[in-house]
Image 1 (tube, rainbow, N blue to C red):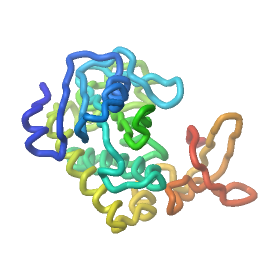
Image 2 (cartoon, rainbow, N blue to C red):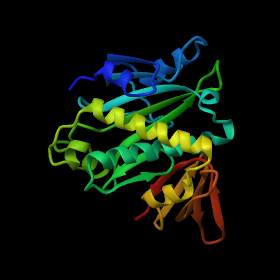
Image 3 (spheres, one colour):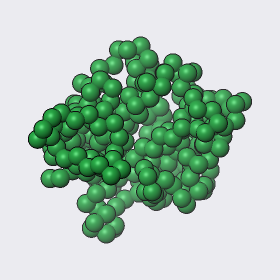
Length: 259
């Protein structure tokens, strides 16, 4: 199912959409465009295939046929968000994706994993990578990859244990990537508005959706490793980890479940 660019422009706040058959990385392409001061935002770049998609750190994002891969250039002052709000902006992006997937898979157990993943039935269905432009530092690139129609049914068992697609969770049903993208943009726009107005209770919303709450996890940040029980997030969007000694506030890191 091809992406309907005209519908995206008509039914969302996007200023422009560039959809490609193939690209090395939508985030890399978006970061180049973000350096152009004349670029109207929000600007979405998507592709049917990525040859060098990136995840956190040195990780690569695997995007098979049928997945939904795109990046959006946003101007944070234009959205009304100061730098102190950026971590919370990242978290509401995950919430918006979770709400979107729940809309299409109402019977599925959908949740968010701090800081940048969305899970279905304890398996990853979406990854988010947010990067800052070099030249125009007030612009962010929000890269998103959602497993939609790329089934893992024939994947190796190790892959099936950690990843799932919407078509797998929907018992083979095929989904419109255009519909999913329009739904996400609507949920995202609504949550951004609530964030700027100060009307979203992020701690409550995140705690309700968090797949880690009450579970033992390890957080690796550089050379530091912290082990404890996830206790949700604080008002600034930091992960709360109850250790044997104190309540730790984790600013960043790679989180892994221990159970």
